[in-house]
Image (cartoon, rainbow, N blue to C red; front, side, top):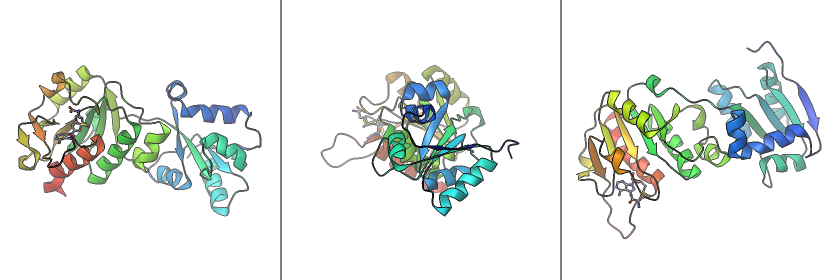
Length: 266
Ligand code: SAM
């Protein structure tokens, strides 16, 4: 437990510098500079606490319900500051009408991929859509994957939209970022095959036995896997399709791929 009890402030103005700093976390630049991110919702903050994450601060709706007051006391005891704000200020912080009653500010944590245990790693090459990134982190968590790796420049997993889509899994799933060269070295050193998903894959994913430990590699939304990474895969698999769509959405394809590869282990 932190030696310091967090402070309490009551804010009524959207011009308050603290409120401005929290609002700025909707922007990627401010998140990169501060190393912080926002998690919206009472339940999400409770999930974070249960997973061992302590916010640096929460902004909580005033007048506070008993449950919100209890949460405020709990995080203060852990050293987090609590800012009580009226509905108008909460709307500004959340950038939406009908905001959540609690918004948590957390430090970003990334995992060292070498510490990811045996099992399934989901690797995404330059995913652009934050909703896809968040949904994939949630799906990887649900299926019991060992970790998620974002390769190259990608949507920010700590953006509000991505965090919202994770539904709390951002606090559970080991997450790493690396460039393509570092990823290639990591993949070569990790036991088990790397299975790439590709529209032109020569193998039907339903026939694959990837063993208990493997990497599932997904391509970017617009143009799929680059040749450089595709050629490093042990297999390129396709997910059979029957209709007129040219491909599955990235998050949907990841869910199908994960289910096929994890099926023997569920
Ligand atoms: N136009 C892109 C292309 O040519 O690959 C479509 C990319 S798709 C929206 C995003 C990713 O989902 C792909 O790179 C691949 O990893 C996976 N994917 C989607 N549908 C797939 C399928 N039927 N078989 C294998 N992978 C698929």
